[in-house]
Amino acid sequence: MNATTGITWVVGAELPDLAVEPVSRTTLAKYAGASGDYNPMHVDIDAARAAGSPDVFAHGMLSMAYLGRLLTRWFPQRHLRSLRVRFRALTPIHARPVCSGRVVAIEEGRERLARIELSVAVQDGTVTAAGEAVVACPAEERAVV
Image (tube, rainbow, N blue to C red; front, side):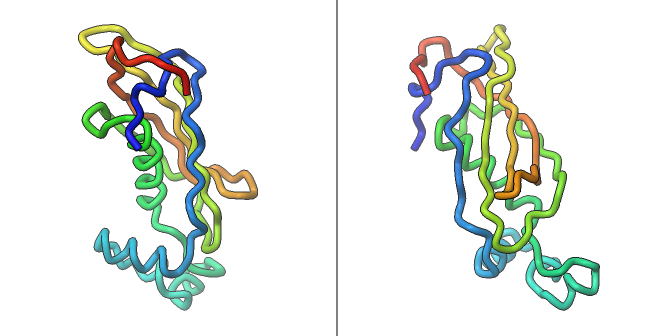
């Protein structure tokens, strides 16, 4: 859903969380196929164990894709001006990622821009990815999340 009319452009406004399906081996195989990233640590338990991990784990870029999904649920893609993400921890198999976003700044200029702080956390509270998006928010588009 693209619902830019469902956002109030104020510092502190929060995007509704996006809870994604648990990370399964099928999720990882599908993502590997879609992205072309067949690093064995993501799809082969023996390779993951040889590298010191107890099991396979999610691709970091999968978390970034989830953050993109969080944003495009509320903003048309054409409003996205930048997206930066830093991977902070592994997302283990069977984890239940939850993506969140909060407006931390509004910048007035040629465009009205919202800076949105982003994070992905798993059920034990570990933040696996964090970053920031800059989204154009035309002044005429106003309402409450």
